[in-house]
Length: 253
Image (cartoon, rainbow, N blue to C red):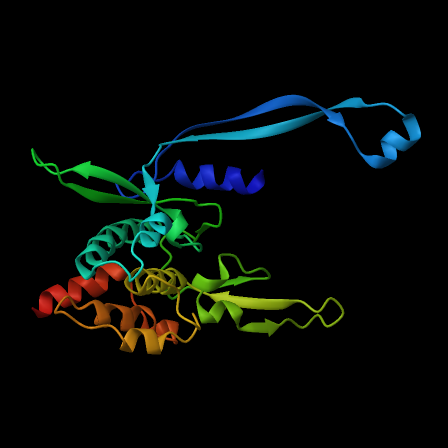
């Protein structure tokens, strides 16, 4: 329940076309049966206990990116990926200005609405970033080079940046605690793996060493390979935000 409340707290501060909208949330107190084995054995009867349930009312979308990738056995077309890339650039740019790190960007957390194109029968995708349960709010005015130090790593393993697995032991040998240090560039890495997943229709064999899959991209003048090479730098200090990469490439043309 705490994670769900953290998600609502984050979404209440956000308002962007490429981020899912949260309409309302509420907690309901309900009665349920106590069905613990010990209680049943000792008392031979059921009793009521009071529990709380937390509900979130969010906008309904047509699909998610995971389902769209599944429709393309050989991967999505490059123009489709560039469309996704441009929209995610707007979303992550907005999160940067709000000093927020998502920390769990992956295809199931990118929702899709299909919008009609004018008077034609065609449609175009409108992508929305969702699931802010792992979100991290940095201090006001924080920048990408400000590191987070935490005892826990969050996210989905296949899309997590390499630095999130580089543990440093704290000087507390009795408890054997380990420190994970990273910054906002973990979201850039996650996006790179998402786009690579879209292109090939499957995840890289080694998501922490995806150079082979990047090399296999046939560059068609869209700069897709260049973007991925920058997003998927092993050293986070050599990465950049997606919207800044696209802006730089636009200026070079």
